[in-house]
Length: 289
Length: 255
Image (cartoon, rainbow over all chains, first blue to last red; front, top):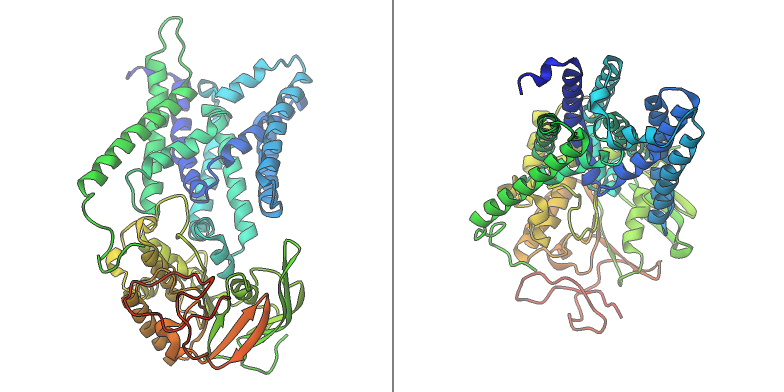
């Protein structure tokens, strides 16, 4: 085990995994609070078209994915607020359009078969270059800065949008900001776990954390810890268990570790609740309706 | 644009259409500072929409709205809104204190840390609503009445000049209704303005200085609060009973 991080590519992979393990669940907590757990999946699908555009035009696929997914995130927000009926159908159309568009556009890439897309769909953390790492670190810093500066406002927005509006918060701007922040996180994380599983890293650690937490701040902290444990655990595990012909992909391994943490956390939460189960909520001065 | 008046809200010829349906029409309403105004009327008569229209949460399809004499009101810290909610909402557990603290948002600029004054206001609000002992509990696991008190405390924490409360008594037991009445009486004594959407006046009756009755999106009665009459068994009547043995003081007929 100690030998695995003597390789440069593994050191870079570890740093990338750590950065994403911290940032994805942090953004994810706000997304789950807003009851938009599947937003990340939608943005991930749209990002694929961005990757394909990058492949065709020989521009950096990460850059084009960033632009396209940010635009897609804004489109999703607009559809969500404008469209009343059929809003979810409109979103579905956008998701499928993104996925199909990504594959079709790739067909036009020079020498591009859709197999090029596989590394973006399922991640390729062992190919992270030093330049990639700088870009990832920069974006993660940006994402965390947004959450620190706007966290208080985003909390109320995700908790109760109408009261946020009545409190004079710039609701539309904050909604867009959160969606774009999620989009950036997804593009960063696509190198690690892949676009198809990227949303898992935003949602599963949060779901795991809230099995045992009572408050928002504690949930966000624990989700970040779970995210780091999943990222590092999955990366290490995939290296350890890749022997001979068997080659374990780090991305899916990371997600499986996160899911295992969810199961453990659920059991822990169940035991905790059971042990204090007989205690009623509240003062006992009132009868529950 | 400012007028030379002390009115908190001035709605002139207010009309609201939602999904092509006229929900409010021809609403002329002026709310003075220090008033305690009760909005009454049957379910679906437009009470909640009127509150949301006053706050600018729903656009007016006709008419004009002024808040503190301004058509482009920006000083949101002066207004506190208690919406009608079945639960406090949100997909992640939040403690009672976290939710009540979020009521300070209009007073906390983006780059300012939470101050001792913020914390003191939050503690005062929770004490006033009798939920201090629940501060560290996850709000979504509380009873309906307790969650309602959390929402009221959130508005109180912002220390606004004007309160707009949509069915603040819903699900709250009689002992805490009395406590809420005492809290509101304090606010009135400090010169605050309160607008209440109510299904029953209950222990708030003595505080109310004016009442407005809505029906089908129009004001059909305006004046002193109506005297108690009727009973809970009136046809078509539905409301959330407090856990009290005595009958509620007044139910505005829903027939």
